[in-house]
Length: 297
Image 1 (cartoon, rainbow, N blue to C red):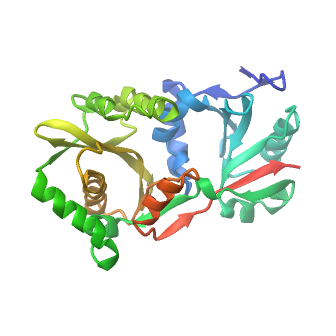
Image 2 (cartoon, one colour):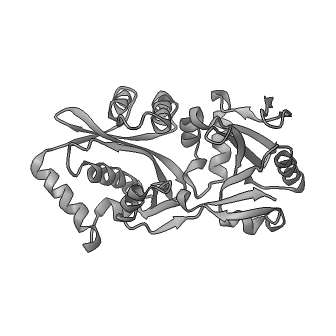
């Protein structure tokens, strides 16, 4: 049992403990979501930040909540997954009405509204552009062909003239080297999530590549399968001292994804940051996976 600090009532939500990971992973794979936050690799990495809790109100439905520490520690829900029967819907509504604040459901796909129109009618619906996911053709990022990618190719060409690099799969021996590549500016949530991902690497939730120059780690990319045709890049960092290195690690990871036969690469959201948005748009996404917020009326 978990005691909700705001509503002061016991709920059946449980923490993301390792002994439950296989069951959760199996359900998440069976019910894939278009947004990157619905892989077990992502949930376990960000658990130190958002303190996720989960509950199966039925064998065919999963509900996950999280704690918003930036907003008085309020608890909100991720979009429920699976089949929502009337009892499950009533459970969700009762849970939300029991809170002493206006609870939200975040990361909602438009398809969820189409599948549950009567349930959705009980909420105010808003578009969350900052958390829309950028979806690219894997072949585009792997080849960088065509005029629109000329600047990316030029940066890589300049890098070829300046230094040489090697890539290797992330493994239990080299994974700790990723921690040295986290910028000092990332001392908060992002750093905590990467440290969690590194600590859980042996569980097989994420995989990735490490880029070396002169045998020294300079960049990494961590990713996992999101759906049958999509891989999501959850974490990626490169040292700014090497011009073109960001483009190199991006392309090297994309080559692996494309060679494995995946059609798309999800490079997650921009969080409303103008610089991040410009960088993601410069790679010309195939489309955006829309994110909606439902606020209980």
